[in-house]
Image 1: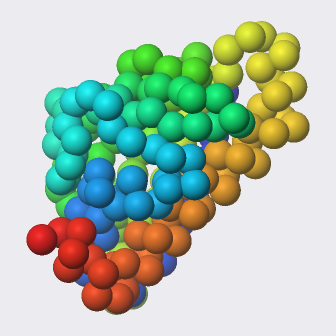
Image 2 (image 1 turned 45 degrees about the horizontal axis):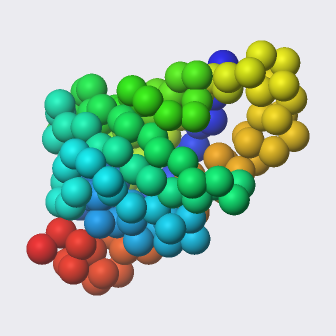
Length: 157
C-alpha cells in the first residue's frame, strides 16, 4: 500500500476550508486538465456522508471511471472517502482540518494499492506515485487560493 501525506496551511477559516475541500464544483475546476466530470451520484454542491460519486476522467490517455463513497463526516474537522469501483485495487482518502496559530491546517492521508502485482508496483514506483502527488498538490493549491481570496464565494454560494 502506498501512503501520501500532505499538510497545507491556509489563511482562512476552518469551516470555509472544510467546505471547499468537499465541493464537487471546486474538484471539477481543479481537474480540468484531466477533463474530469461527474457521471453518477451527487453531481454538485458539497458531499455528505453516504454520498456516492462516479467520476470520469482521462488519466495517462485512457478514459477511466472511479466511484467513491463518503464514509466519514465530522464537520468541520474530517471527512473521508473510499473507492468502491475503479482502477486502484483499493483507495482511501482522509481529509483533516484543524486550527493552528490562526491558520487552518488541511491534511491529506491518501492510501492506495495498485492492481497487477509486481507490474502495478513497478508502475507505481516509476510513474503513479509522482502523478498522484502532483494531482493532490495541485488540488490543495486551488483550495488554498480560493479560500484565501474571494473566489470561495462563487463556489460556496
